[in-house]
View 1 (cartoon, rainbow, N blue to C red):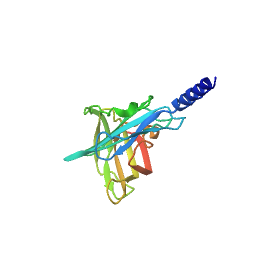
View 2: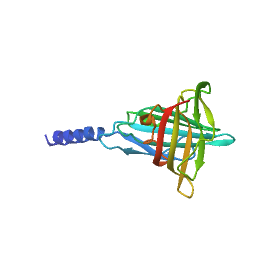
View 3: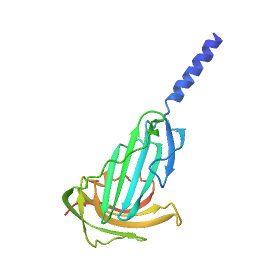
View 4: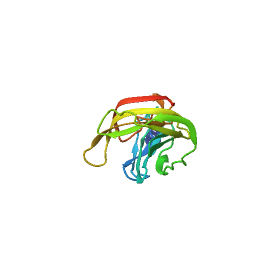
Length: 198
């Protein structure tokens, strides 16, 4: 009887532990995938998050950021894109619901470069939190709205933070579509406006 009781307790402990999902946790500020240890998430967490971002500028190699973690409850699968004159940004977010399920590297889908008829004011400054439009950019693919954003970002080198402001095209249709809680490099937002194109 004592052995049965001990076995029942071990079984209950195993079931209780099984309620918490385990997710890979890591950050890489230079590559398309990161590798880390499995951590046990809080019991209310039901998914593992993987995210991959790419910043591309004409004439320069793309800059990648990859990160994995326990997923916030509100986090959903997403594909976000934005573009200014001669540069673009894209972010893919994937949430899965099994322990260790985020091991597979993410792949960014091909860019749709077809003009969609939308035009947005454009500008891009570093070291400031305002940006006056100095031209127009023609939007492509699913980027059917315009964005104006000013924010402070984390950097992978010194100084550790940098302010920046830009205007351009975005796939977000409102502020609620902007993935600010997923952007690893984002410290704080000063201005975020999403509007229809011209």
